[in-house]
Image (cartoon, rainbow, N blue to C red):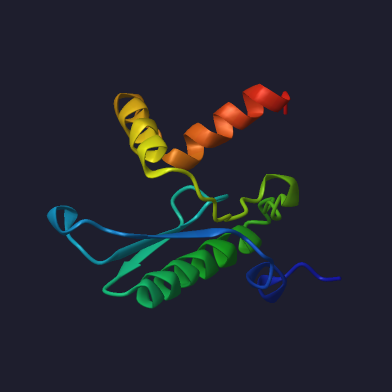
Length: 119
């Protein structure tokens, strides 16, 4: 199989899309988790995603022209979104605990789980 632009554009890379706070300019921001500096923004999540994909396409075109190595998605490290339920007071305690650590709930729960099960 020829690893050309279409090949890489159709791989399942993880793209993170986040809403930007109004005091930080507002709108939406998107980036490729595996490629630092490949990002986009827009007034909507769809615009940010499209902008990010265009930036990725430009990145790929240059990398392919220069014959650079282009990483493929690492399925073992791919994040999976889950939905869990826990008592509200526990969530508040977690939030209070992690605030000075500058961690997200997800990062904190991942660290705790990894410590407990030795992963």
